Amino acid sequence: MASDESQINLHGYNVVTILKRLEAATSRLEDITVFQEARTAEQESNGGASSSSNKSITEQPSTADSIMKDTSIPVSPSIVAEESSSRQVKAEPEVESKVIAKFKEFQKEFIVPFVESSEAIDPVVKQAASTFAEAFDEQLRFLKTALKAKKPELTDPDFAKIVGPISQKIAAVSEIKDANRSSKFFNHLNTISEGAPALGWIVNDTPVSFIPEFKDSAQFWSNRILKEFKDKDPDQVEWVKKFLQIFEGLKTYVKEFHTTGPSWNAQGKSLSDVLKELTSTSTAASVASGGAPPPPPPPPPPSNIFEEDEGKSSGEGGAGMGAVFADLNQGVDITRGLKKVDKSEMTHKNPELRGKAGPLPPKKPASLSKKPSTKSKPLNTNPPRKELVDGKTWFVENYSQSDGPIVIELEMSQSVFIGRSSNVTVQLKGKGNSITVSGTDKVAVIVDSLISGIDVIKSNKFGIQIVGSVPIINVDKSDEGTIYLSNDSINAHIYSSSTTALNINVPVADDDYLELAVPEQFMHVIKDGKLVSEVVEHLG
Image 1 (tube, rainbow, N blue to C red):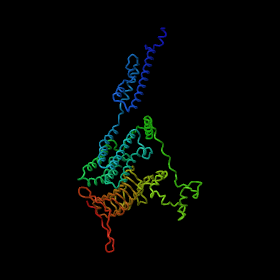
Image 2: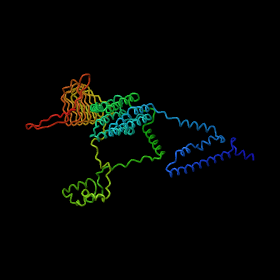
Image 3: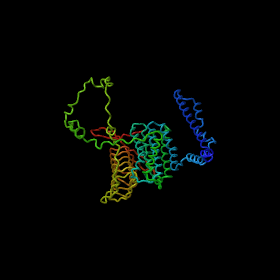
């Protein structure tokens, strides 16, 4: 008998007693489960339980805790210590980087008040401001990713993935502006749209000097708001103030943490590995929360929508452009096969027929039914080119924001052609012959002196600054341009045609400029058989 008792006693503890207590604990857990299920069914049938009943359930101690408190059941000290340490590890919060914490402070101090101020102005302005704020949320995600990854090449496809969401939000702000040109708050939308590209500092090596450029661009439109509402609506003035403060706050933040660009982790993993980890983590979190992983992307469209169906001729109802041209070649006979609709069958003349109409045919896919936007331009995939040809002409082409400023030393016999570039500054030192700027977007040109002149053709949001003297400036088929004249070029002849929103800045005292708008509207009358044109001045 003594041998049997020794077999069921381990380290001084009775195994039978332990098993009995575990069985009792299991029975109590089952009873609680049955009670809770019955209570839940009762609540559903009665439309919800009283607060006192809920309180009685929530205040009931768990069986596991009661077992742990029961000193009659022995528990290994090592297990208790291990559980205690694990609880401490779980309770310890993750230390947030100062770079991220400061950026969140910047958002709270500058972005949030601006969005709130926009809500009081107009719903469309609030929509643009909210989209602008979402771009900063995307930039926060970018900075978090950068702290974990090594600096990639700008041509890395993974870099385009993390920058893409920011670019999409900036483009969305511009689309909101373009869709509301008739709004009386169009100047507000322009202000946000012109300032939003400042978020592109993350792809610039000198971001501290990059940010103020877009503040100045936005200030052109914000000054119009101040002029219109300065003595009428203080809320509008406060809105402008809060918007311009964003650039000062962003500049201060960037100057402290990112003076030469985003702070990447030199000891971190590759950007590709970091993105894979983030993707797997987000997918696991989605599944754990009951959600399904994101669906796969839709299949690509046909490689050529103009291809004809093989095996079908145009006479057999075949598709393709060949069938279209075959029908067009019929001339007036093309309408012979059409059915003539009687007036009694026309739904617009007989409204009662509309309810009897069958289901509408399916719509075409959006990619085929929508016309491409006239403002969207294909990405320029050609490499940047700065080349002197035949010792006479400099060609500056295919440059973008990431390529930084371009500096060229000119000689009197040399000319410059600047084309197919965007978001870049070109500085031309010395005295040259002439300059041509064609097909550019947001290009700034700083010129010392020229013998001939400057031609700006089909360019958008351009800037020309004259340091020395230039005799002639021609602007043709361009929009939203600004020209800064020097004292030596104050008498330059400026010609404009088919151009909108062109402003000429003339130097005045104290190194300041006076902005003069170039007329866009003219009145034409016939006098003595001749056409006489006069500028229409808008006063007030």
